[in-house]
Image (cartoon, rainbow, N blue to C red):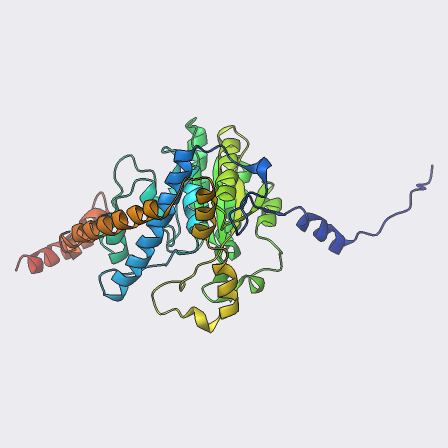
Amino acid sequence: MASNTKKAQKFDAKKSLETVEEQFQTLQILNEEGEVVNEAAMPELSDEQLQELMRRMVYTRILDQRSISLNRQGRLGFYAPTAGQEASQLASQFALEKEDFILPGYRDVPQLIWHGLPLYQAFLFSRGHFQGNQIPEGVNVISPQIIIGAQYVQAAGVALGMKKNGSKSVAITYTGDGGASQGDFYEGINFAGAFKAPAIFIVQNNRFAISTPVEKQSAAKTVAQKAVAAGIPGIQVDGMDPLAVYAAVREARERAVNGEGPTLIETLTYRYGPHTMAGDDPTRYRTSELDNEWEKKDPLVRFRKFLENKGLWNEEKENEVIEKAKEEIKEAIKKADAAPKQKVTDLMSIMFEEMPQNLKEQYEIYKAKESK
C-alpha cells in the first residue's frame, strides 16, 4: 500500500478568518466632498432621477425635524429619529419598483411614505391609532416591526411566496446593527438563502444598538460577512453615499428577480439624534468627537455638492422643497388630528374575523359604556 508522501499542513483558523474578512471592502462612489471616486460603480440615473432623490432626502430631513417637534409637543407618540440615515433609507427604496414589498423596522417609516403610505397614516401609526396600520390597497408594505429582527423571518416568507407565485418582484427588509445580533436575523437569511428567495436584507449599521457599540455586539469586523454562513452574497456599503446604496440595492434586486437568491447589504451610517424620543440620551454613550466625525459625512451635504457641481441643484430648489414639506406636514397632522378617537370596541372588532364568545361578551360591555 503506497504511503501518503504529502506533508499534512496545520490548519490556521485565524488566517482563515482574516481571508474571509478581507473580502469585504466598503463600496463607495461619492466621497465626503461629493466627488466621484468610483466611476465604474456609478449607477445609470437620469438628471431628473438624481434631483428627485435629493428632493426626497431634503423633504425627509424636514419631516424628521418636524416629527421631533411634534413629539415634544405631545402630538406624536413613539418616534425614532432618522436624520443621518437618509441615503441608506431613501436611496435603497428609490432602487425598488412599486410591486416590491417593504418590511420595515420602526425607524423605517420614510421608506413606507415614499412607497405610497399617506403621511397622515404614518402620524397615526406613531400615535398607536389602528387606522395607521390600515395600509391602502396597492401599497406593498407592512406596518413597522417593533420586535427587533422579526421582520427578517417575515421577509423570507414573503419572498418565498413571491417566488412560488412567479412574481418578478422582491421583498426588502431593514434592521439595525443590533438586529443582526438576533436569532431571527440568522434564521431569515439562512431560510431565504436555502430556497433562493428573492429577498434583500439590509442592516443599517449606525454603530449603536440604542447604547451598545457595534464592537461589543459581535467579534466580526463586518456585518456583511455574516452572509457567508448563509451561502448568500454580502456587501458593505458607505451608507452616507446615496449613489453607492442605490447601486448595491439595484444590483441585489436584479439578482433576486433573475432567480439568483437573496443578498445581505450592510450600510455604514449614523443617526444624528437619539435612538428614540422615549428618553434616550446619546451623549451618555457617544462622544462629541464621534458626532463631529460623522456630521462631516452628512449624506445631504455630500449629495448636494455632487448635484451642484453638475448644475442640477441650488439653494432655490432646496428652499422650494423645504417649504413644500412644511406645508404638507402641516396638512397631514391636521388630517391625523381629525381621525375619530380610537375606541376599545374598534380594536376588538378588527382583531378577529370571527370574535370568540368571551370577547363578544366583553365587546357588548364596552359598547354599552361607549354609548353613554
